[in-house]
Image 1 (cartoon, rainbow, N blue to C red):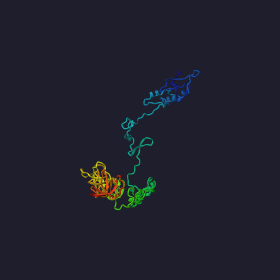
Image 2 (cartoon, rainbow, N blue to C red; image 1 turned 45 degrees about the vertical axis):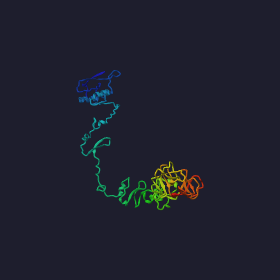
Image 3 (spheres, rainbow, N blue to C red; image 1 turned 135 degrees about the vertical axis):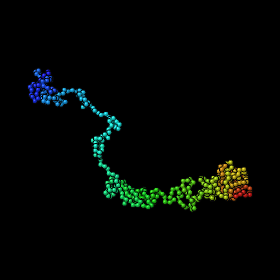
Image 4 (cartoon, rainbow, N blue to C red; image 1 turned 135 degrees about the horizontal axis):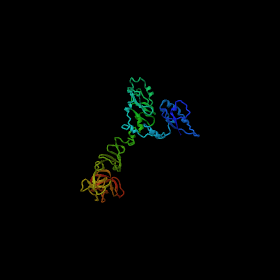
Length: 435
């Protein structure tokens, strides 16, 4: 029920037995205000304790003639909404405390050219101390403050900025190295470490060099020690691809062997002592090279143009035009139509005999033929006595032996031959046909 109260009856600091009112404007007396007052159970108006607390504020307003200063959460305001409050606040917008206010990513807005660019020069205007600089403030930001101590200017280690001291003092300050003074280095001395982290001066004497033997640390090694380490023999014969001895090599020369994989001792272009078969198997011989043939006990010379070995003064080289292959012991005669060539014959006691073939070859290639001396092998198809006379036979390439002399004689047997089967017979070849 509303209660009307005459403001003229309300005075500051006055206790009234009448109902207390609340008002917002006490500038004038004799104004009527109405306030809701709840009724008691008996129907009598009854003010609440809260309403009674208004009395001092009313008294204050009555005394000052204006508004009463009051708390925004006090009884002067009824409960309302945040939206209503925001509607009355013109310079801000308030949120509920439970509402999230996560800032959006906006770092680029503060970058150079951004919408909210941070201007260092503008920041500098907030500090007028010319010696101050912008630096971290220790709290995650930046602030102007005194510049750090100026670093020392570049100066000589031995200059006036340092007092004289010792190398030992310097080493006491250096934790990752040990420094050596010049007095630690004699002539021809280097720095070397024989164990971890302990370098020391090492002097390299004359005729030595730095190395490491099979055991022990690095050191100055002698030439002898190096040869031992490398396995170098002390002599030429100690090499693996050289002759094993000098015995029997008097006046010989060192040469590359025929296989071109080792060194041998031999005369200039001399292939040593070889059997006939080995001599003929030699490859790489040069014109003028010599070889002692143990089969014939003769010195042979090599003719590179024809690819044959021959005995000077006892042999001749001719082209094989027999129509087939000629081998050692075959009897060759001069060709009657082709110059500087030979062939075979089936004429008994034939003329124009050159001699037995010493080194054969295929048709169209050069062969070596014995023309004098001996012993030379002759292919004989009869028995023969010592000093029998040799002639061509009716079988091509073969000779016959008889005891009498006649035209076509070209050789004399040097041994007996008891079999009539064709076989090589050592003979002495005559320098010309004998009658």
